[in-house]
Length: 415
Image (spheres, rainbow, N blue to C red):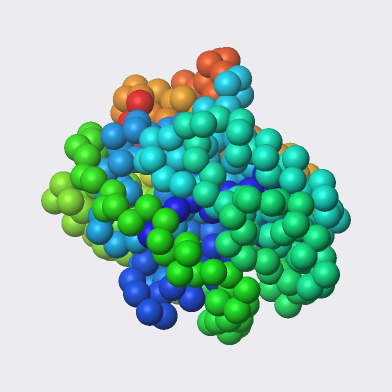
């Protein structure tokens, strides 16, 4: 089985259904997971559900060969789509989940929130099925079904369209959220119960054998360029405040011979001795007071001779101050002339084409930006020239000051 779980729109329930499928199938056979597009939250839940590291497959920032190389393997693969099936970046929708279906040749199962419809489900489903013959839709899973009678009405309206399952309406599988999306997997003490509940629901109401019969072929190997490590020895922050690093990036570095050493700033662990210290994104604003007082961690940044690179949350940590959502200002590492604030939120979202002429990530990159921080002060030499997904020039991004640099952008792959 290899299949893409998508939907007509966000909020249809595809994440919960994907997690339930992964946990239910993994009880009997190994299964892999992948997530379409730039997402750090869902993949951690996927990994917890199936016991395998979740891939990010990004049809905007990765070449088709790169996507095929990451997806290749004998183990079944379930890919969770992002947004609606055909929703991608402006101007032409590039990066949509439908692009992954075309590139990988995988069938799509469409999750439809049927809570407020009956006969109208037929034109909706048929419209998606016939919209692009290069995107094969194998059938649907009905979500939020109100009663057995409601299910009968929906199935009758769909006619010959395959229905792989009908999930009853339930309020027990909602997930708490925060400003960047869902609470992280490691922050949920009830995670195993939640995943088991989702699996039990899916096992009871989905035809898992029929889903397992979809696309039984092995996804073939492909050759693709990989990301060279920015240094030979890399110290990487990893905990609830710095959790947003892409597995394929770290795997590329490791496979190329770089030594990766992980440490926890929240536990006040100093950065290990390395050529480069990498602070990924995450939620440092939720832990700013604690980070301020973690002297061993902060001093390891201030006193090292290593290069330091910060992405998004890591970038803010390298600045002078960070103001949290309550308006409390916290002292940060003070290595960049940067002050950021969440007291007044403003969404910054979108894919980015980036080019650096200096620093550990010199050259051209494709990435994305997603944060609500406001920049109060940013003085010094910019790190990246930047363009949006439509090719429009953006203000220079990030800062570089001596051996320290960073930006709000998350790097996905080489351009």
